[in-house]
Image 1 (cartoon, rainbow, N blue to C red):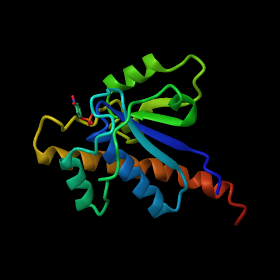
Image 2: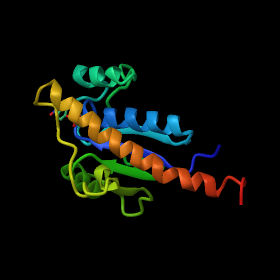
Image 3: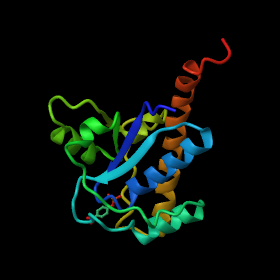
Image 4: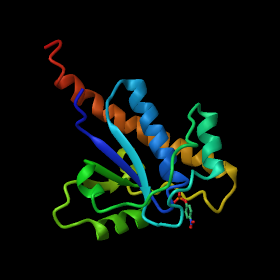
Length: 165
Ligand code: 4NP
């Protein structure tokens, strides 16, 4: 199947929120049989090459997903053409993405939680300086957003399917 949409999830460090968003979106797409490309990155460079925070790995594993092989990377200029959608986990990172976006970038840049009715404009809170319970909140937020993204893609797929009229 031709991939028509590709998503880059972006937080600050790429070790807590955006790897969980990547995992949740990959899982939701697989469950729905939707073929999309998914990746994550950080606006900051502190954790380039690092695996996700062990608390993020633990919450993903509790939901059946092994993210231990993910590695942190920083947003790159090429991402603004490579992905159809670049979604920030909070407004600071959204502002940073808009600041860095080349003038002729093709990616749509937005806020992840804008896909959830009633949560528009909201941030996925940064759990890095908190305790493990914060990562459960992160997982709940990114999973809900992932389901909403995939739900929005399924009609696209059907309309091109050439099946029932
Ligand atoms: P993330 O969390 O942006 O959700 O990956 C953070 C991870 C590391 C740092 C900040 C936020 N840091 O300052 O190192």
